[in-house]
Image 1 (tube, rainbow, N blue to C red):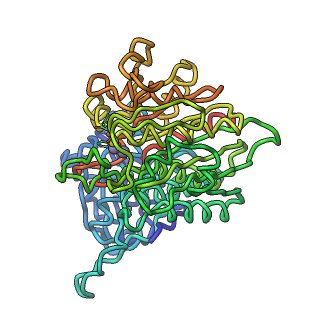
Image 2: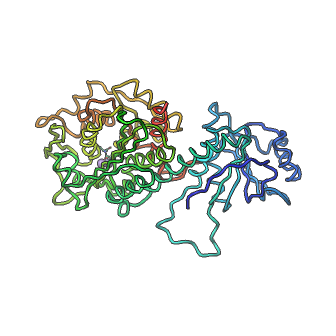
Image 3: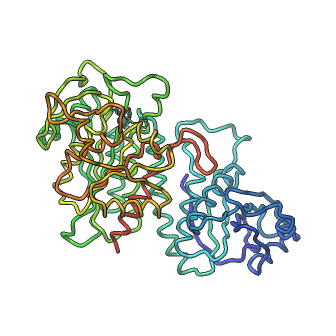
Length: 492
Ligand code: BES
Ligand code: MN
Ligand code: ZN
């Protein structure tokens, strides 16, 4: 159930709500804004703070029972000493959403002092992310064990006009992330290339975007031998999905967002070990990021032209699958020697990146769960950022910082090109283990057109294999925020 978000001008002590969340900085005291709340709690808030039972550290939380009137329960959450106020708010709200869901509160109110427009937006995004869950493929628990799901959150504001503006963008951001996380979490047998195309059509219908999807026959006509060699091992129809959003001026060159959409990656003939293979349902998180970003961009009605391209298929071993040693020809004419059929994402993206040229893009950013090597290099903390255009790389890095999705640059020097030289073709699809995420990006570079380009390797950041404080196990929604802030930046 999506979270209904709203803003209201009200005093924290006076709101009738099952749960009031109060976000506090380190060593806070009861000021004028919290006097009524403290009174409603019979002075418990003041005592808690002066005893230093709650200190306002990052990720700290304390649950208080409410009084006879006002909020029924109060949850204090620490903002910590983060120098970035909005990042601290986003994190606290994410934790708040998570705890609220565990507490079984059907609705909540949020209060933090001096919240501005951007603050409202990030708190909404955080609450929605924290309370997000995927329950579509689980039976409901028996009636008596059921807790109400968090369905409503209201942010208490003092400036209602700014609050309303923050609300509009907050809703859009929240729905973009929710869409991407849902697609990521869906199992491969349900989230198929057809399903991604169907989802793209729904986004298009909601926001007036043009959606097209090429199938196998159309891609054959376009001579996409690289994409198609991955798809030849599965009877499932592959899809190259294009979503065109025209929010900018007529004729303005679009930003093109490209996503790897491997609905499942078994490795193909170069099959992966059984242990942990189920995680490869997340190999479409780049595609989910593109679709989630378009949902948010459409919701915000950003005045920019944006095209989303998704290369969707499934990498399977079979009698018809591509084999190591095979040579295929990409849409741009280059011959590729297949060394490892598990390096399939770059084969799909090669043709999608070549196809992107027809839009005469102002910039192209692709996102892909491309290499295990990127997880080794940057862990689950930073997205790998690659590009020859330094200005564009900086623009993407700063968009990622704004979104709370940090990236880190890795080099694309010509020396690395030697690692993907082939004896029989123009390039080979794997350079082996050394510099694995760089050689993957170098491979992609062979297929880009005449446009500025940045590649994001989100293999480590698109989903979490462990349960962390603010990050539950599962999809993170990355890179929805990076894409969104980039496009916002282009809106001026
Ligand atoms: N989808 C994987 C990369 C991946 C690995 C993503 C782990 C998330 C977690 C990709 O298609 C792949 O298999 N890459 C190979 C490339 C190698 C064969 C050159 C890899 O990283 O091992
Ligand atoms: Mn693979
Ligand atoms: Zn893959």
